[in-house]
Length: 257
Image 1 (cartoon, rainbow, N blue to C red):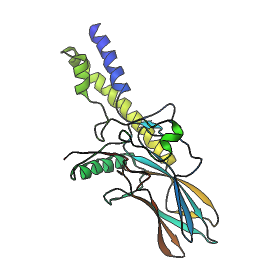
Image 2: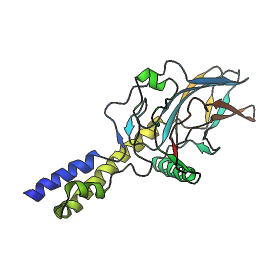
Image 3: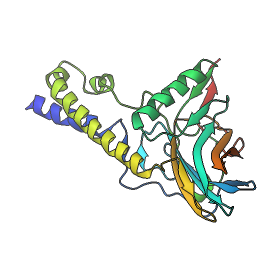
Image 4: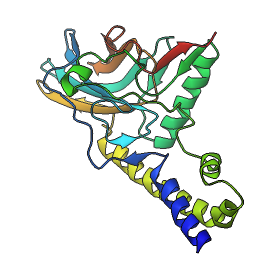
């Protein structure tokens, strides 16, 4: 009976903590006005919002990527082709949009390593005292993330300490199997949601039309620019949004040196 009870407790702990999981109620996000906009002689680009871990608009827990909400208007009398969208982080690394959850997590871990090499810690979310433009003001505050990328999924060590003793070994294997199955199921649901949300590019922008884009990117600490690559009349062009002040502090921790 004791082992049975321990098994139930272990399963509950393992299936309720760690991993990426879709929330029952997404965190509200105010999209009444864009954070910033920029125009050239062909298009207008607006950054409507950025969804990051535990921030406004969050629809899943423990995410290791960002979701950029962008509007693009074709101001010309001809079709324009949207070719690519790129986010440039604080050290000049260009990060391309991606709809593959595994690739997003892998690229985010690479970001963590890249910043660690220069003495900076990267965590998904904001640091204490930092805000994201109007995001915090319109939602009454932004919850802060505490898990570092790559360590967001709970392991057996914590459960072993909590439960203690030899008894945990009796239920470890079946509980671990249950945890793995639940985690796989959660990841699958998140993967499908990303595919549904992600705007597929390249795409043709009709004359005079406005398009809303939903783009996923690996973690970009204190992103400096959002670059929209497009083609007009066979000519490749780039329109950039300066986000150096708006998104300063995003995902960046304290200097470790």
